[in-house]
Image (cartoon, rainbow, N blue to C red):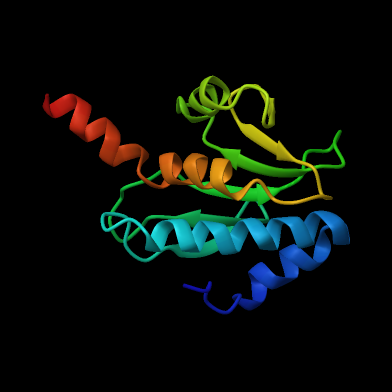
Length: 141
């Protein structure tokens, strides 16, 4: 599945990023949509802006936690941002301790050059897109 056409305001947000970061995050965007499409419980994503950054929400099903794409002020890397009140970044750190750089409980950082680590990143994105499904399942047990 290819990602849908970029909404105008989201396209502007990507264009406002330094070109290498914007290109990397557009690759991540494609992977977000492909990962969502691979899960029955995720449904259609809402693509919008949150705090001026591209954001991906599971509004249709409520299955996941919001994923934002941007950069951190003190970094030249692309940033994938998650709700800091979740356990997502801690889980990523446990699964892939040496694969990514992390910032506290809110960000996974990616170098702008080189091959995108799609397999590992798809696991992280899948965990975010199904975060509430996983938690509901644990509560029901």
